[in-house]
Amino acid sequence: MTLETPLTAQDALIALMIAVSASDENIRTSELVKINNAVNNLPVFAGYDAERLPRMSQMVFDLLEPEDGLEALFGLIREALPEHLNETAYALSCDVAAADGTIEGPEARMLEEIRYELDVDRLHAAAIERGARARHMTI
Image 1: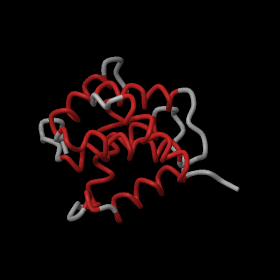
Image 2: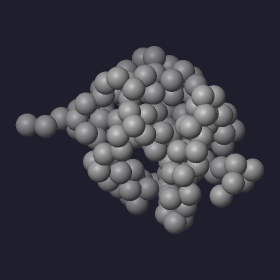
Image 3: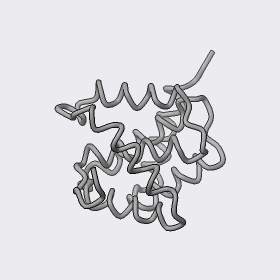
Image 4: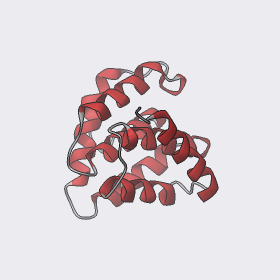
């Protein structure tokens, strides 16, 4: 997959989840499991070719290398993602960030950037974040 190949909406969702996982430069197994479970089980990914995951990961890693790479990534995501999926994208991103039990530092800043770039209302974002936190609590 080259950058000239347009992303699908599903690709955009996956790219965001990968970007959140990579944001702290430590991709954890729990985050990868969360991404795989989402792709394998959520209706929004019905019919998605999971063979695209490694190429999507490489694209995100390549884009995050240069200084302006995050801006380029968000440009591609905004082009591919229908507006009605912006909250879905934010919810998936929050779930990946919360998968290891904590959201702090670079992951928190990435979520803030996603919220801004996708124009997710602050009140809706707070509800989504609260739901992610509740789903990932431990005893």
